[in-house]
Image 1 (cartoon, rainbow, N blue to C red):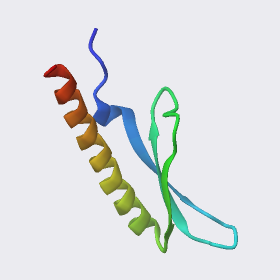
Image 2 (spheres, helix red, strand yellow):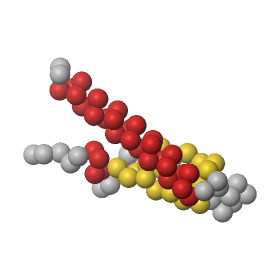
Image 3 (cartoon, rainbow, N blue to C red):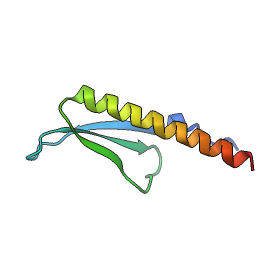
Image 4 (spheres, one colour):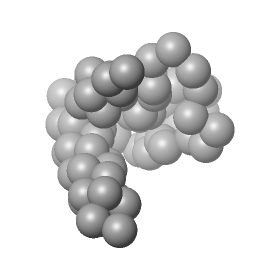
Length: 75
């Protein structure tokens, strides 16, 4: 059975905090089941800035998963 591609399993959500901070944040989520941890960062002044930072963080996560899979299959 083929496993779903990690690139299709994760996505970035951008949200605005209406509390005293009033800032934008990003969070990486996984489809179908929760990740068990939260990957999130806040303090951005715009939706665009938060989205770009989240996109970069997601790319880093996915690249790390590819490296981890490769090292496991080499064993």
